[in-house]
Image (cartoon, rainbow, N blue to C red; front, side, top):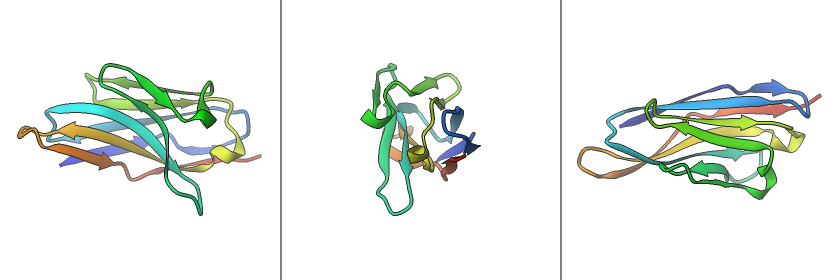
Length: 120
């Protein structure tokens, strides 16, 4: 099994910044793509940003130029730097990890979610 532990959510004023972090642990041979999703009340979960094992990134149009995803393969962590936050960024943010175990079985794992609230 793979466990994802997130940290860094909270309350911030519009225009402010937050940094989310997520660490993967467990039975892992290889971590492939890692990413962040979010779900606002009454809405479906949506992709925010994803990063491949080689460092290729992809962002939702709504966060391009404001959010930056990064990862540390040696530490099995992924981070999301969020700048110029807007009220519409308010949501529960989930870490996502695609990995393989020692039998090469692919596995998709999710964190427990961390609340980000942007409000004055």
